[in-house]
Image 1: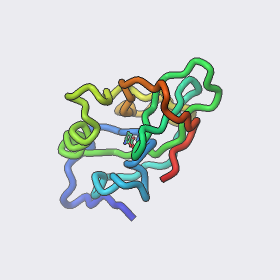
Image 2 (image 1 turned 180 degrees about the vertical axis):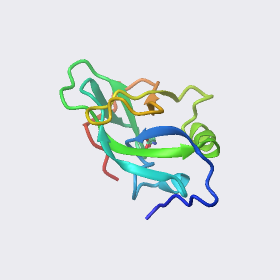
Image 3 (image 1 turned 135 degrees about the horizontal axis):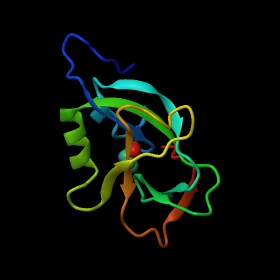
Length: 133
Ligand code: PCA
C-alpha cells in the first residue's frame, strides 16, 4: 500500500485525478510513492479515453455519457513537479487542467486536477471510460 508518513511528508500541494499508468498497479505508479491515496473517482460525462499505445489520453467527447474512471491522490509539490515532467506538460503532450468530477468529489479543496491529452486522436483506439494495463 502507498502511504503518507506524516513525520516526513510535505503538505499536499494538489489533488490529482489519475486515470492511466499512474493508477495503482500501473507502469508509472511508482511516481506516486509516498503520496496519499484518497479513493476511486470518476469524471463527469463528456470525457473519454484513447489508447496511445503504452498509455492512454483523456480528451473531451460531447457524445460521452459515462465519464472516465480513476483515482484521487493528494500529492506534494515535488511529486507534482515530477508528474508534470513525466506527462510532458512543457512539451505540450498533456496539460494539467481542473478535473470535473462526479459526486461526491465535485467540490474538493484544493480542486482536483488531471492530465488532459493535447494531441490528435485520429486513428487511435477508442477505449471509453477505463484504462486497464
Ligand atoms: N498517466 C496519467 C495521464 C495518462 C497516463 O498514463 C494518468 O495516469 O493519469
